[in-house]
Image 1 (cartoon, helix red, strand yellow):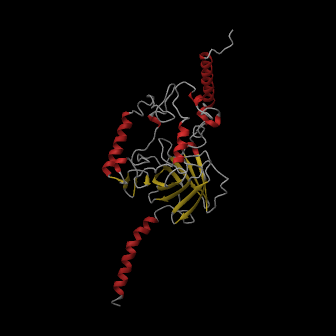
Image 2 (cartoon, helix red, strand yellow; image 1 turned 60 degrees about the vertical axis):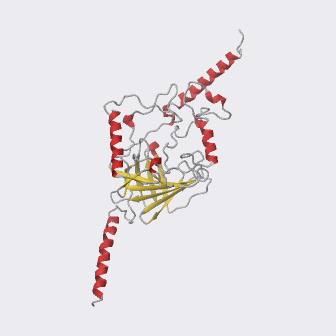
Image 3 (cartoon, one colour; image 1 turned 180 degrees about the vertical axis):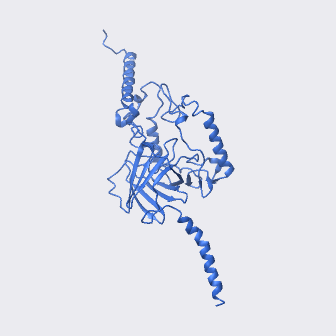
Length: 359
């Protein structure tokens, strides 16, 4: 009996240690089948950058003071820009190559419409320096020579509008030959932030998750892309390719794992190819948020795979339709304008060579 008392006390102590952890896990919402209940609307906006600023090196964490300074500086910038009191102020210039507009550029949305978040996100109470967690420096890995060549080919077709038909000097198809020549994001086929995986943007950062026993639907506010994830299924033949990839999922404990392949050849996120393989992990937190982790693997684009994670914050607000319209009502005008510039170039060429009827 004397030997039994310490053993009993040890068992009680062990239960006391384990109970809080088990209780914390049981705080999450669950479906009738016992799986975590991911139903809900989520806001993914964050001031934390995708790639880590180089001055942080391999330091994944921000001090609370640094995170508060980022929050306060962002609030000051918003106030300085008079988002609400002066919503009609001149919008920032936007160019197709990110360098700003050329002649005739009308700019982009003004600051009233931007929603980049109000603070850096934290995981387990620790603020992050970047969304990317691997490589350890928090930055995207080096691209392959083939990826660099693809980027150079794309860049040849991207210039600010200078009022000339500059593309006539390029061999091969031009950027305004027809509707299919325009970027798929401009045609509202996919959102420019990506859906598989989904990354924070300057606006439209909400997600909606609907869950059944055999399917998960993730609605991405940007471009209103709806991903249908089949649970415990297999991928079809690689010949069957989709704009958002083919996604199948399964549960590993309380984490939903999503595996996506078979991307459409023209779907690319940050230069990836149709051979992209994306793995995502969604873990429901006790406060209702989701910890979202993703890995991008495309040997034709990056020297090594890379991974990131950030928080989707549970929110009561509804997710409204983002009514992206093909060409933003202007595809016809874009193509008509290109034909006018081409005609102007032809007329100028004819004049410089003495062409004409001679009448």
